Length: 252
Image 1 (spheres, rainbow, N blue to C red):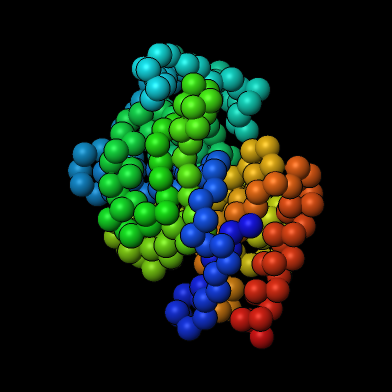
Image 2 (tube, rainbow, N blue to C red):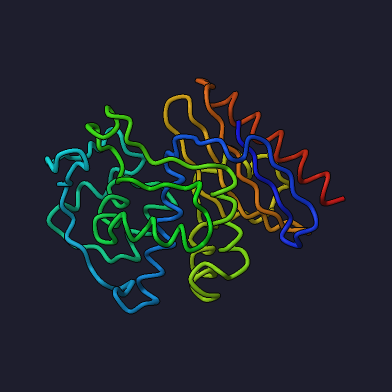
């Protein structure tokens, strides 16, 4: 388990296996979101720009075409929109709030993975490595996966929290999307009712992650990366318990 915790006033922090690399799962959508806003800030893109909804992507291994399966995605409605268009803003909302893999791959293809990596590096979060979109089976079989460390994700979430991811306005917009996250079984479950949390989860088989900005009385960033627990409920319970302990220790 990798843990990164720091209060936003910078006075307290705690790390455990924070530089150990984990499969990023859907936490890789945070750097994708940041690079989207970076390109909007640059003027390369506008959030109102539209993309054709087309279920056809290219493997990083050999360029061959692969498709996503709605049955393996946490959001199925977008698959019914093939042939239509959606704005980048709409796709970003789906990518973060309901963790749509389809929306993610459409955005990644538009942005370019090399640009996502460059922005991550610019923010000093080199523990985060985005190699590809989601569900590239040939890449997965060759061990070519998106990876992250708890520290790397914490650097990105802190940048958003402090208004330093792209710029203040962009950071506020990103935080607003992250606050609308629909999956709240891990970090939010360990907090007092009503605590506002901007976060992104990542769950695949035996992988349970959550990266959060917690707007408690004394705000903090917390990243929990859990590997090896098959039972979702057991993993979420552990993550909520750690969150509760850290919250209570710093928000007396």
